[in-house]
Length: 577
Image (cartoon, rainbow, N blue to C red; front, top):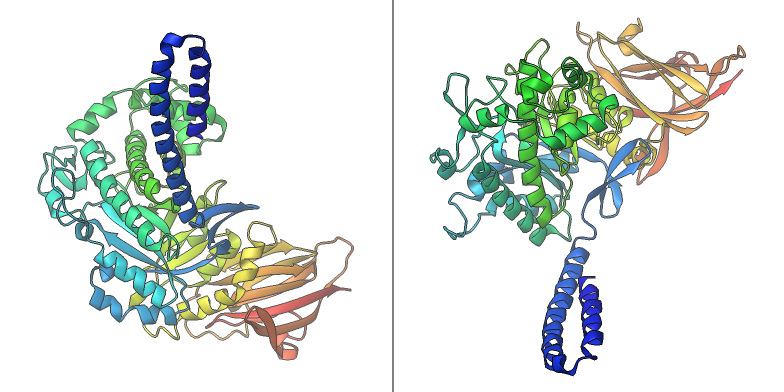
């Protein structure tokens, strides 16, 4: 501790002064000063220790095998989530009717926006003393506790879907103090520039106040388990900002810490970044265009660095007050779109290295998936060191996505968007899927990252998938590939599920609309036989078997079938003959 260091220093001084009586008086003065300083340091250390104890159980991330899990109250937590529509949490009375329906859908986590414009309607600073308004924040925390739900707060600060629409009016109207990004032809945009220290400091000040308040009201209860910093950061309709501050930064040398990162990680850079650098002979210094060439891709790299630094600064300010896990989310790229045609420079896969180098305070990067190629985007975000979480997904997409992401990519959670808009909360695809996932939660958590679990996702473009677990190979097929399957419509719906190995010859399969056949992994010519298939459910964590799925239900020993239309669980035991 610092007090010990000061103590040793003072003792050395006393030894010297004992040899010189003329300095005794000075030693006494220093002793008195030391006692005062030491007392202050001890009290400071005690206060720091108390603060550390107050947040010792703060939600945090840990690694388990290939997975990264969220720890809440000392245990891994699987988020069965739903994100509110953008405006829902802006009115307490409106939300009063929403909370009960969320609980009926078997959610355990709700993603809730926090709006800067409501948090700080008038500036709170040394020059303009005032108070932050935490009314909406507190109402969400209290309602979540009442309905036994956890919260992930989404900070709608400087940017929301690229734009700066949730900033307070006093920031929007003072464009000299809070400068905006500009297009190539000099027009101001509804996007504050990330190159302004005033913009960044003002956002960070408000976010830090939010985190300090959350710690004060929730630091021991852990209703709030994670934070999203900003929302879908990106530059549009140009690939980069052309305001004066941005143009100046673009003409300067590429920051030395980015160049150090590139040199250190040259062999593992994302292919896109590696090729840009390679095409310019791996230069070790220069401007952005000298290092990476003149292109829209270079413009995007440039913006990504400064967006990421901005988000990192805000996150650091918040974590100093209360170090919850923090992530940023990305609006994804439509096929064939170029930088500027999509929200460019956000935390996208081809920019992972830039974000990693510039934003170490951001714990992970997450995709908002609205496109049909769900599996492809999961694969892109499932990379070493990046926690998997799907904070936002189209609520019209099949909930088979959740099974696939959680089991196939060790996702710590899944969250359909505008969850409150779904009808029939007690009996819709979300409530049905989350009921099954809730039953499997402890098994999922136990098996994540260990190679004993896998997910499958099947649709018209991908109707088969092979999984190898234990002593067997599992051939998953879309239900519609079987001529006897019931087809309620003409389209081939997305189906899928997960498989968990209980022992080398016993497995749980959960999902919807899938057919499974089996083969031994040995090459001795043996055949896999079905010893038993039981449908069932978990009640208070214990398996309760239902019907024995024999005869017509397993097609006379040929396969396992989990019918479409709803999600279910079956346990199968195999043997070889």
